[in-house]
Length: 237
Image 1 (cartoon, rainbow, N blue to C red):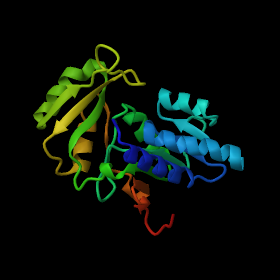
Image 2: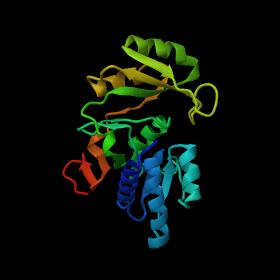
Image 3: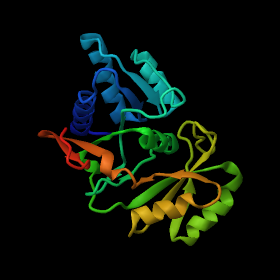
């Protein structure tokens, strides 16, 4: 269970991210509780300021929440380039590389991150790490699950098929695939590992996000308020 201070930190950071949004923007809406806080604030701003926005949801869960909050939705077919994506992360390192995928929406989140002019990541202080470590989620088509697990085991990891909490059997992503949670004892070069994993036939995407540091802003909620780390070059928030 998340502690009350951690939940408040996430809420504060989510609200801060929502306050960066400008009228007329097309937004990517990530999956998870941190993004939900931003969506709550965006909903309030639409009512208070008549803010005109539209969101591209990265999961069915996010689409349902957005509709409940009255946030208009759109697609990448209509807007292949979007202004900003707001999302969370499981880990953030000092140069703003990420591990994502706890909500099993990593593939759509990476597609949206690629399409976005700016990636705003909302976290609490507990998500900051010196080095990316531990579990890397990997989305795999069911047909390839056994050979992919064998390849990843050969890379020194322990891959496990993620199972559902309220159902028997594996978690099925919105794309109809499985999630492998791959535990690495250490990640020496995250970017190289990302490229190696995604090159395996049958892998759809992995949860390492190493290619967007130059357009990433991380908003960190803490007991003393929010602080912002901006990876964009020569730009102010």
